[in-house]
Amino acid sequence: MRSMAVLFVLLAVSVPAAAQRPPLDTLYTHADTDGTTLSYRWSNVVTGFDMPIRVEVPGSGTHLLKPTEEWQTLTVAPAGAAPTVDENYYVTVKGQ
Image (tube, rainbow, N blue to C red; front, side):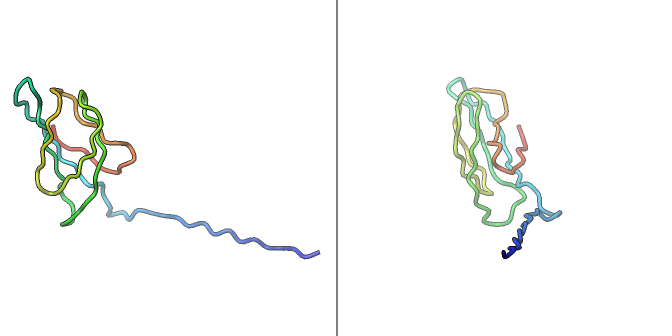
């Protein structure tokens, strides 16, 4: 009877200590009763950083935003609560 040795290799994925979450800057501007403008952009990221992000905006539902380093806007229902990012994205939301 032959014995077989099985070798299991465990690969560990680690995040470098210097890595940080990309900051998503947000800002609400209350224009009128028809809607509120949500402005957003990536900040403190490498040039050309490109990552769409799914965001829940209170009163307006879920939106797939495609932030860049330049400010972009989205008209949403009047709301005062901060947008929440899908928990599957490793980002930090700043602003208000």
